[in-house]
Amino acid sequence: MSKISAELSAQGSGQVSDGLPEWDLSDLYPGLESEELAEDLAQCMNRSIEFEQCYKGRLQTLLADEAGVDQFTRAISDFEALEDLLGKVISYAGLIYAGNSNDPSRAKFYGDAQEKITAASGHLLFFALELNRLEEEELEKAMGESAGLRHYRPWLNDLRQDKPYQLEDRIEKLFLEKAASGHSAFNRLFDETMSGLRFDVDGKKLAIEPTLNLLQNSDGETRKSACDALAKVFDENLRLFTLITNTLAKDKEISDRWRGFEDVADSRHLANRVERKVVDALVSSVVDAFPRLAHRYYRMKAKWLGLDVLSHWDRNAPLPEVDQTAIKWDEARAIVLDAYRGFAPEMADIAGRFFENNWIDAPVRPGKSPGAFSHPTVPSVHPYVLLNYQGKPRDVMTLAHELGHGVHQVMAAGQGALMAQTPLTLAETASVFGEMLTFRSLLEKTAEPARRKALLCSKVEDMINTVVRQIAFYLFERRVHMERRKGELTAARLGEIWIEVQSESLGPSVRLGPGYETFWTYIPHFIHSPFYVYAYAFGDCLVNSLYAVYQNAEDGFQERYFEMLKAGGSKHHAELLAPFGLDAADPAFWQKGLSVIEGMIDEIDALDRL
Image 1: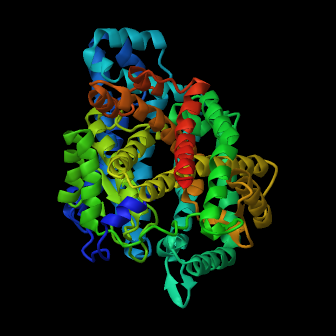
Image 2 (image 1 turned 120 degrees about the vertical axis):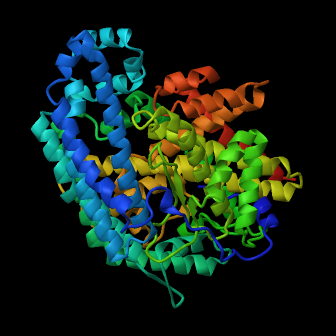
Image 3 (image 1 turned 180 degrees about the horizontal axis):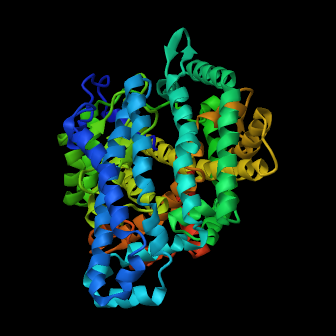
């Protein structure tokens, strides 16, 4: 998420409005007690049982019979409709819970819904397993004869990537059912614990989101107080977070071992449909660039703040000359939509629906999930965006980021429930591209050197957070999961790994003082989606290259870009990038993306010398 400070702050003229939008979830269901929700919950189980009774054990027979191919295709269509129904219910439960995870009634509903959807999914589990036992030649022959079946070719091809890691049906069902009392339960424990924590900052009891927000405060003592408060509470809960981390790492190791994954991150690479060598090339390129990016930039920033080195609470401090006036919601909306409209009116029109139809939940509330996300829900409805908007320039860029996701999800919905979802690596492309459009729009309007420098600094800091920091997170996870294979890690050992990796990535101009060794505890991606984090770096470097193509393209770029978004998960990243002349398998591709960040630091250095 970004911090475009100078130009954005110059546009802010007052405090954040109290009238921030809260989402209207009625497009999913009217309420927890609604008849529609109760009916769909019942239908999830009933239709799943009917589907199992109708198709289990028959797919091979249907495929072998020329007259049965239409029914075989209808089975996939019925399965897709069920996925949409189950996804609609669990999306609503998840969004209700994210709105206030401390509400016992919401927490109970979320837990009950998870159990019911898991039970219904158990009756559908056979379908993918049975499909992957079909002979390739017979499936190809049937697709050659049926246009309806050919529609699902991308999904079937994608499904077969999982074939080498499938287990016997009963074991797969056990894995599915045990998730509710296994990793899903520990995910929920983390969420409810984190949202319930309160941090004492100068006598005020704050939740985690407003406390983290103080790390961007212009006053150094305030930043230090917030940092100390975070460290104190993290330390008080260290035993719990250590247990959660060890348990989830062991749970993943068991699953990986049974499925036959070699590397600790291979299951994530498979889910992302990206080759290990591509990720390794990205990681290697970023690690090699640590000194040219983070080390160099933070050395410059320490000088601007009049310090020999930055304390860890100074890393995201605003520059001294930057106005910190809060940016009102309407101004944030205008900034982002104007930038989107400058690229393509269609993009601004889609993003505008999120504001017009209350698809955004923006206020900070007790119990609300920290951070931000855009939830795609299901193709038959539409996405919803969660923010914790506090009027910072960074919050504006978070809005641009999440709306990029939202536009992508709306455009991909035409692929249907089986092919709309984009792998994480490319899912971050549209969000980071939305940020880049907003940043470039502001930069083009900024000629005065001091303000231009501040604007560039903010973007560079964002890119360091997105690329350098996320790859450091990935390296931390790798070391934790590899050591966990030998036994449990103590809290002290987790802290040691954290400090070692962060020191390597941030460089000697950032002093990681006492207390910072606990800051691994609050990163939700480690808990919910192991090894997710490299997707941010993947998306940022990709967008740097993609934007360069846009700048040099005579015409037709917008159409090609929208076609990429509309493809959803129906194409491999190589197919999606080919129309732009980009190849993520080429190591030079990553160097090109990183050189954009380095070029911005060069420009800051030149402006600094004026």
